[in-house]
Length: 307
Image (tube, rainbow, N blue to C red; front, side):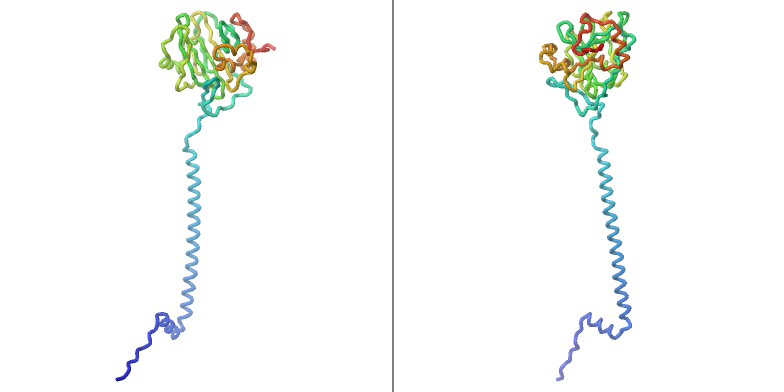
């Protein structure tokens, strides 16, 4: 019996090489094909990287734009014009970062200058108390004198009380930069302030304790505070100016008499001579008028005002 010869088995690559060795004409074409694949792969890979870089840059750009957009949608900080000052434990505290006051501070008058017949000086003892405010007196012919907001301000405290049976309003305003104004003996309020009657108690004789107005009522320069003032034929309006950013110079003297009176840390130690913070023309006009009140020109604030 003859032995059976089994043909030698070749691998796939060996078969390919055997074929190519017999067909040498195809070798250059194969090499060229392989090189073409390499070049195409390189070009495609480069474009892919370039596209990826562009996508990354676009994403970074979107992040920047998104961050910029988010800044504009964040809650706005309290506007300077909305800063409120309130008295707390003998100090006045702002509700936010206050704007700077004008320097020098020059205020318009809150009344019509030509209607004024006399002035009451601030910073003097009248009756049984020290008064940080002064005031304006008018002829007895009418109570109809308009008092206006001479700067932007907020009504923060108010009271209504009876004086000789006649309703009077005491009003305290703060301006954003830190100047607090007092008006007393308003008889008829301006349109924006009439709403305080809804929150104030029933007025009683001589009880001028104030109520905190919440939210404070904002008045813009020129808005009407009162349309009528005074007590019958006694026509006047009290007016006080207080720089509550820091205590006044007088308060540094421990023997100052104003410190002995009721609650001096609310107004007395911050009061200023408002005759010194008005225009020179207004100042001279008012100083030429008769002095109202038996205390005359006595004032702890207006020292040397005529010099």
